[in-house]
Image 1 (spheres, rainbow, N blue to C red):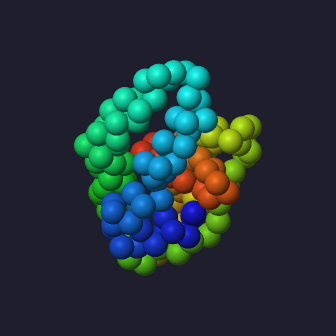
Image 2 (image 1 turned 60 degrees about the vertical axis):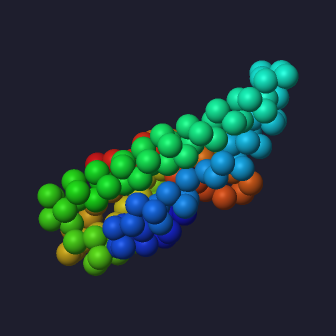
Amino acid sequence: MAEHIVSALQHSSAKEYSTMFPSLEDFNDMMKESSEIYGTYLADAQREFANNYEHKLIPTVEHAFELLIEEGRSKGIEWNNIRYIGTEQREQPQHKFSPVPVTIVFSSNGVEHKIYIERALVINGQWKVSQFIKLV
């Protein structure tokens, strides 16, 4: 995940970043696994979520990434020249869909920087990003 994020940062591509966000199918699977919560309204809930996913959630993810890019530029980060250093993760997911914080360490012009992803997820063995991303 971290190397894909660094690539998205190097390209300043919010679209590339958003491909690492859980897919609508991932969320639908989560909803199915919790179908007792939705009861007979599961299909309705999935339709409503799909609309929110496309019109609100994905734009929010991309906007958060764009803000991060702009903040970094204002701090002198040359995104196209960053180098991945490592990942810091102090917590392990407690259950299948539990979010955990992840920090990505990179350098720009010899200066170390960190990006904090507040709620990264592991879904089907793959790390996924969130809209809760910031430069620290």
